[in-house]
Length: 416
Image 1 (cartoon, one colour):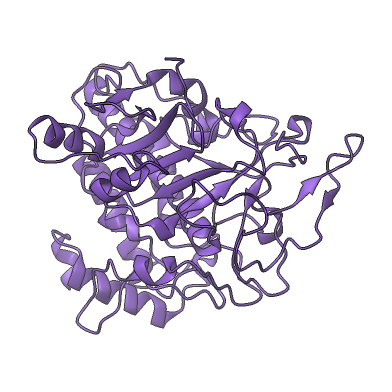
Image 2 (cartoon, rainbow, N blue to C red):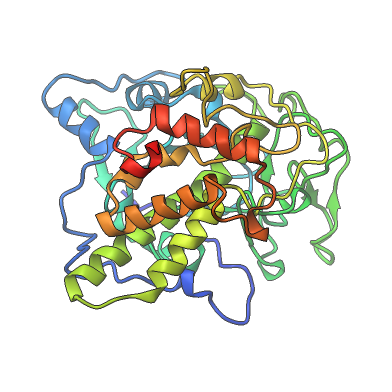
């Protein structure tokens, strides 16, 4: 089988004169990390063990292959589907606006599906090692197995993923075949990115009012690939008519799911980076000042201090907005960090839900304590610096109360 290293791939870091310190490589082969050989505990590894023990099974659907069963076994909602039509994958020959790649995700695992592809791609999050990459043969077999694909590090370990194994979302200028204009750049996007610069090369369904994005648009002039045809590209309720829906679970690429995935990619990579740096520093018995800088970046990002405000409400149509919020947890007043706002900002209570992730809890004690201490300083108003000015006193109090009710093992000072 041809090795296929896919997902949100072949994306270069945005054009800068130099690589920021937070994006420099952290050595994956350092003894404190040993990324390629250390034991793994992620959703795919756990599922594989259940399959070997006869406690779980992947069933083959004649139309969709292993996809429905894989999503069910990994606990991924179908309404998380987003679709990319740009050829930013090693399965590029099979990807186009007529045959987009479907991506599904939860907090700790992502599945990529290409209709007619040789494999399905799975990226699972190990609490210490970060994202781990697998493929599953698409062809029917008596004993489907997951194959780890470390060759994927060619794309998924670099400045765009903050120097550690990770995923990213990029916005490109693609033509009607899905081919990106690489010379125009492939900037990585996250919740800090202006709305109008997002989702080039992606399909997007949902209502964003007059806020325009680059989704659903293609270039038709090879002499001017940056000139996109934006007719009928905004506020789509469905992708029906854009491609043959046979072989897909749904015809949505939900705008709220896209917003969420973009947020999640960077914070996941930041947590992985901080964990690696702290473990290496402890092993080498040598301080690393970059850890403090990365912790500050994580605090700023987790509190959405750098999120551009929405000018108009955003609404998805897939059910993702509801199902994502239902995952909780909730405080005594019924509030959750998963509650969307979508009127002027992404979340009603702007602190990343990834604070509940095993990756956060698995941070070395010194790094986790430093991160929590900084969050506490901001949430209690001790730090009212300008960069956190968008957090009102009411926001801070609500977030702090939610954490006290829902986040186990907080330091004692959070209860004061």
